Length: 248
Image 1 (cartoon, rainbow, N blue to C red):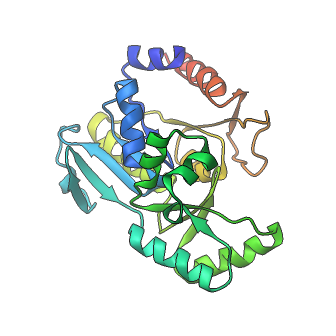
Image 2: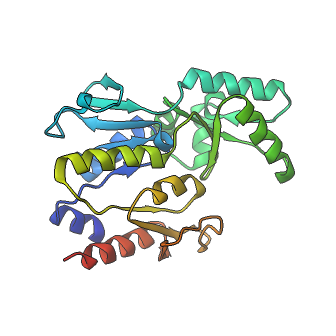
């Protein structure tokens, strides 16, 4: 809360960039009174409230979709294509199970989300989270099969099957739009998992926080990486306050 208050006080845009779906992110944006653009499903979609920027987004090279109050820049695959890929992987002998194969109750038990939030997590557009309980040595075989189908893999709490999109591409697009609006800007991003790496690579100040076990992800390494002491929200709070206080 202290970091969130400071962000509002300084009128700094807070961009939610998550593996969560549109309904999930909208749920938290309402709680935060957040009216800024956001990125869903590991960079699959960039959602920009209509009339947020003073210029026409359509003047840029992006193909724009419209949904309700948003302009959407689609970077991710179509969800039915991802579902077909999951089914094909099973036919090839891989024991993968996606959110699309699970009931709301199963997703709730697996994630710890309440039923209402699990329903939101199931409403997917660009990315399919899945579990793969096989031995670790079989993972490279699965990743090779995913690549041969023209899709990509990333990992946070779950494995994710996605198209040619990632958080970094989505973040870079928003950075470009903000520069068009405001000139030179300074950017920071905070994450904790492998699926955050492209996002961290795209900003001026990349930060990772500790995972629930109190450790930093050893697979994340960047030259200017800031390691914030504190698990999840605690580390986020400390890092954001320190970064803001560095500014004149």
